[in-house]
Figure 1 (tube, helix red, strand yellow):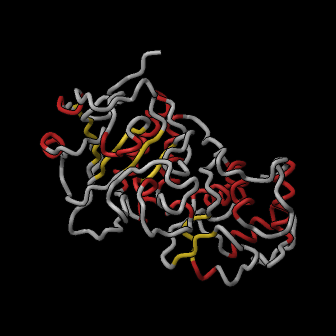
Figure 2 (cartoon, helix red, strand yellow):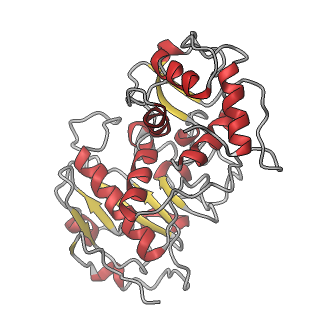
Length: 332
């Protein structure tokens, strides 16, 4: 099979210096990892920068208004990711220097990333999943931080760096310790971008084999406590990205629902979860991505359990959900 080297949604600006670089090659290995970066200079293009620098060059660059430039064919290794050069496709994204280091990609950038990811999946087979450590043999999408050594958060999982993941030390993607690239706000968008890319490609999101959703017999414990294993199993059922984390949930709901005991990303300014939006759509609740009382009541109603809008410490509705996930028989 002959694969397209140049993305049709990009302006082609080949940089011969890096295309013809002979120091490193892929060695015939097709790419499996899509690594995202942020350029804090607010540049309209990185063509000139990559043409004159001596460090390396990313395959792609995406501006804040969603325009895409491609500097190298996919089969050329990108030195921008150091140890991942044999298996990664690298994309830089623009951010204005006046913005904070935690500024999100614009809506146009998110859509451009999803379209590019969809093309990489269809053309090159990069899977729709989150890579779980630097050098992940399955691959997927990742932030540059995943291969950076530093004191990063351990939870949610998506915010971890090389130091916090296992097996640690498999690959180094940067010599700069503590580099936050592409920042927390953008890392928390990777699930959303993956789900959108899967829709564009007409494909389901892959199950993540290195983060098992349950015990070895494929079942989760029916204990009425909604933790990471229940979340992973539900994410697989709903065909949303699988990482065992319910991202960006309003912290005010935490103390009200003691049965939500692990893998919940409690924040003050919540934007909601892709998985939760899909669950809300299926149970007939308002799709804001947040597990509030109305969503809990809708789930309780759908599962045929008492409706009080609360996930208690040992929850009847969670037990019903866990049983349904184990049997594959859910009413939604």
